Length: 310
Length: 308
Image (tube, rainbow over all chains, first blue to last red; front, side, top):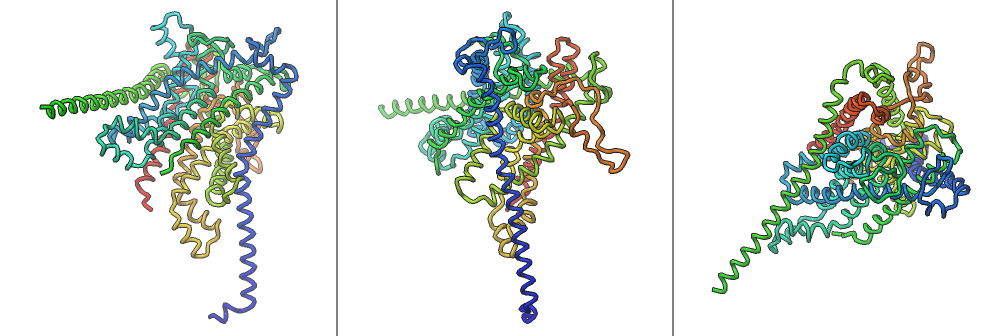
């Protein structure tokens, strides 16, 4: 048998097989590499596309006007290109959403991670996940036809479209993202830290607030950052429930357009490719991307700075 | 005497701390209830408004100017076709990227860049993907406002979800499985395709389903590519009577999808159309809930059955 195995012909055959096998492996590896590379290509394509159209836009409109003008009326005859009203709308609606989502999400996370009995957690977690899976257009419908009438009972002067009701619903919508990431971060804190705290006579609440939460800080910060960038980039709820009129206001009781709502409004019409109106949505999109990018970088730095290694 | 006093004081302090505990627990339950009640309110509101409209005709008729005659035929057909394109492009690319990053990638700067980039992509607002698709697919590559452009836009959007799910599922497989395969002379790809992928299939599938459930409900990127039009016809059928019996004409057809149809109805002032919106929303929510529910169930089964 060993004689047969060492026959020259057989040996060469095996070498050939191994060569083909290597080639095959290389081929597959490069295909897999290309699909991984695609994510970088997508990011670059996003940046190139937004910058390219924005550059054309900024040849018509100075950056100074873009940043300081207080009116945004690019589709009117008397066109003004000040991004401030849209940024204000975005900031106000996001603030309302975050005032709802961050405290509630954190409380839910602490409760589920440190207090809730096993059975409650097993039911509540999937339920929250379902809540996060509801399409945003449905939340928009809910904000316009349920929350706004409800709020009008409390504040009769509230208009039919308002940043307040859009923001509130957006806040509820973001709760699952915040709570599930915060909870994951807290549950990743090793048990012996809690046991140490309990051994010193601390209550659950003290342990949760003074031991577990600080230890999970980097994860909690990441959850908050994710919540913020969700709120800033959210489109359908504000497009449906906050009206689409650019309005420079810091009052959540008023209707106003956000950056995203403006992009939707323009896309609903039939703007010719290459017109200045077409370029405004890319300039607005670039502003939005930069805003979320800033938050992502802050999140990344926080994670790096405060990461606890057990 | 002093000792007793001290003890009393300690008891008081303990009592106070326990009250805080209780107070927080109640707050927690209330917070959870707010989230759950909102969901119930949302669902009930849609059920009350939309249920009477949910007849067989609603699924088999086209949108119309008359609210009572309008239906979601073109919308659900469009959604199905767009999802086909999305799944066909996002699944191989996402799984491939996940496998590469987890099994093949060398530890170097470039790999780290790809990893950070995937995280960043997940944080990019969906409407930005719409702008990318508008500039790149609709105009640059000349796909027009077609099913193909929409499918690709949504595929880019859910790519990070699929990548992350694949990586997590593969990472959960113990190293011993790989070592066993290598010890028997398997190549890397044989190890991946014969062992790692089958063992992580359930986890990857969970990620794919969650991604697709998200894509089904996405409205903003599809509006951005300019697909909000009155569509009262179906795309050409993928199966034809003549040779070669399969046609890809539907890829370039104009279309509408469920969330767009719902948005269209919500933004009309007539109340009758808003009832239609409720009905469409109900269908949409049931679809996404079913998909997310399936994913949750799969994950639950996996956690129970697999013991490495």
